Image (cartoon, rainbow, N blue to C red; front, top):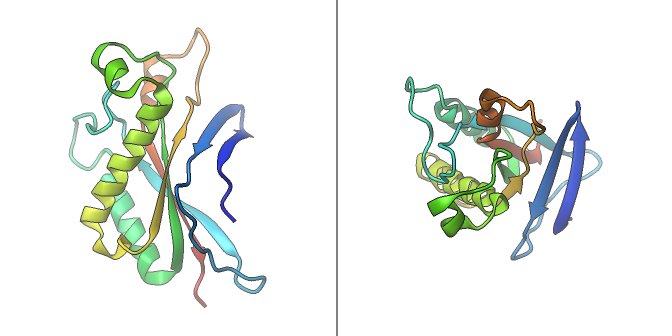
Length: 168
């Protein structure tokens, strides 16, 4: 069952708000003997502030993309993957200038980051094409007046989670 709406999850003093938009239904097959499991694969980012399609530059391989692709490939080979969740993160800053004009809100920016990541992963992993990929937006994990630039940078990522049934 897929639920469309807003969910609030609280863990380890971090508040995550998810806005889920589902434009069509899809089937998830699971049973008592083969339950659906959710496996965090990794994070891709950080993204440039206010950008949906640009990762911060740095040492190649430090943005998590290669690690996520390798782990996704292993999951696709090893388990029956039902769907993939991409959680597009944003920092607490309000959008300004061109970003505000393009996206209108941090929520829309987070979804755009998740959608861009979905396209990138599908190009790198053709086996992912027949699998449903849900692009979601999350709120910032860190907020308050003492939030450092490093913590805000850590929020500008896309978390990749695979849902599926483990094969025996």
